Image 1 (tube, each protein chain N blue to C red):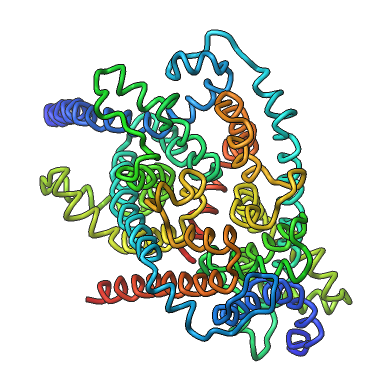
Image 2: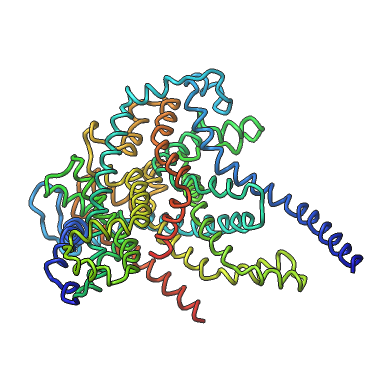
Length: 292
Length: 290
């Protein structure tokens, strides 16, 4: 019988289509881009081998460092924005609250919407002429706080991060809510009998018991926010004056608006390595902490 | 005894009212968070039926008259209808291919024995870690050499390839739970492996296939980056790309824009209202394990 489960014909037949897709559209292009990273190539003429020149240029371009800094800003803003707010909402919803189901659905709603829809909606809301944010500020006499939220380089990065946080809170709320529901009720009852207050219970029982989940969420949040591109691209395209330039918008602008495919390939490779480095590093750090 | 019982109920009653009182700040916080989460969406809906004149007078006010022509204008003039069907076509075809190709690979990986099994499985799973932007340029170059730029197939093939890792991950772990004797029994009955796959394995995997279908649909329907770099002709654009170009083409038609945003969100919102639990579980489970 084991012969059937080792039958080469079926194994190849079954795996071939998936492998074909994967090799042709994922693995091979990445390898090829590694190769083109060492060329000067506008996409039309013969590629011209230039060694490490592209990489040298990347690491001496102040705009690239700005984009790296902005990407890090989004990562930090996401970790310290999405996770705590998601956690607070999850803790509130886990207390037999009326309408908990409704709020749960409502908070998750932005997650299912397309980032382009979210980006365009918030661009309109924050628009300095017709946007409601400035309309409200003007009507309640806070004119001096009405800014050109996306057009002013001073505020654009904060604005963009706030919208990203708005979209993803629901995701972490659900993850934390699931972890909270896994905490055995007997523990809470025992704490109640011992006379522990709500705050003490939160910090000494609830949070330590869901620590693994919180760590997993941090890793997820870092990986997820390293990938932000769509939302920022739709709202600002990296502007004004590179104020919201991310590594991904930098790559897009360098490759598709000025046709430098060799350079774009090199940037892609650098992004891939930086992102994977971050994901691996955050995982290793979390695991070490878990063991300690 | 009775006295004691009374005491307890009395005590617990005051405890409950105290709890209720304690919950008031929680409700206030929840209300504020809820308002911030939902008001933008509510605003989008009611602004979509205002006229642009009304919006410029007060973007805050509720509509006084319903301008449903915003919807027909967006659908016809701004071509949202065309983009809508392109998105539906691309999403559905990619899902069908992803499920067929992914399920057969998952079946082999979960139930067959061969030397490279672990390697092939890892190869697919690593795909979940690759940041999408780092493959945009490589994939663009690849599509150009395949002469697929500016075709629906550039999107269908990429969505399939990038949907495979999570599809194989979910289906493989589901199929691994099936007893090995299924294969043996089917072969004893004289059924071929392909027949076993289509008539027994696929139907048994239905719950996992449902989850993965929803997940892939949401991803494909929302996808923007690939469409942005592959598609240039207006009549091949998907919804996210078409929406992105909306403001450039119809400057300051905010009412029309909101109508277009509502139209493009309707399918996912309906899906969400009907299949909420599956969607939430699918999106979070895939993420945590990955």
